[in-house]
Length: 252
Length: 252
Image (cartoon, rainbow over all chains, first blue to last red; front, side, top):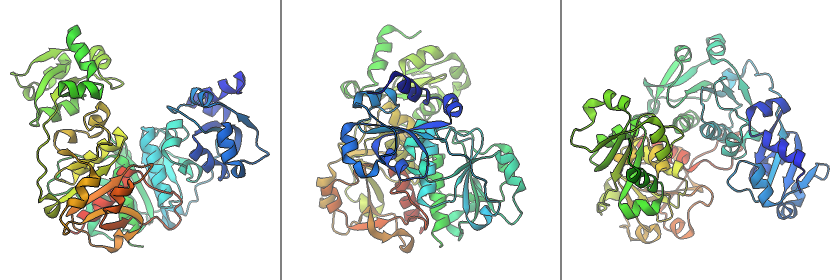
């Protein structure tokens, strides 16, 4: 049984305002909760069905406060259409300093006003696949700790560091030796380049592209060639990022 | 003003059952409606706000039955969070025959039980970008004419032919000269191949991968390499398809 107070607290975390006020966020579904348990994120509460608890005894640390909940309760308290396994409240991690040498030694992804939580989550999952050191988010991006984003990361929320930066301020201040890449229809065909994963790859919002001041700070413009008979005007932001990242990592 | 009968008809098309019964589907939002108008799909009804009508006079054919609607009406009748422009009812196109020589001369995408309409729409958009001749859908896929799929295609619904086939029956019957590609962790590293866009690329559902009988009909297995420090277990189905397609089209 979930107490009324805990239920209200969990439901308040659907909203960003309360996530910030309480410094906590929700992780929903068995797979995501198991990813959380194997990370170094701090857990406040664990709500599990008896079945999930017995099936995952080894992964559930005894010292953690744990509440048994029915599938109905988990579904009512959370945001998923149905949740038959588990839900956790985790502490929002403190933002670590962004190592200033980073964009010279590895590739960072920077997102400019990516407002859709599903796209943001898919992009974090992609950063996790390629082992990027982290993702820089402009203040206009979706909240990386919203339930929809967390679900779309498929566990990457627990591994990929994020930093919030005004890209218009941060990018121009990077040393001139750092490549700042962005997608541009008039850019270089990525199939003809031998890109290496160093610098910053900036991706803009799907509907509006890069904001003008961010577009002006690009140092290298890249273009994904369309098929000969292709008619689509553009690609989804996460799809474009995936194709670009594969082109960065194919020359290693 | 939208009549009660037309309103009820439009709302019935949210459901697949009524789309099949009436042989019609919904296209929502100004951009998608303009794509529909420039296609050869047949239009039954056009519901437009006065503002959209006056801004797009040239594209709105005089012979089409047209109803003026308020933004509130469009939003109430449709499935979008808000619709301030237009909504159309189009006839479901008849499935054209699948040219039997196709998979030898061009690359077809085949989807095995891709149930998420957003993923399906993104995959159709991708097929449109690369100019694929069409997409083969297993009966368990999401409906390509559901409002969510149509929205996610960003106009590709009006250009990319789809065929429904049992993949377990269709794939083994293809001539032995046709390559049938699929993603497999134990497959060949795509970065080391010089793939050409001919044959069939089969993508499975995100949660369950390919169904066993479909997996057994693959003739070439491909693997997208993960980054050295990467930890994600897998990629989203549309993301994987995008990376694979870019690898097919980079050698032209």
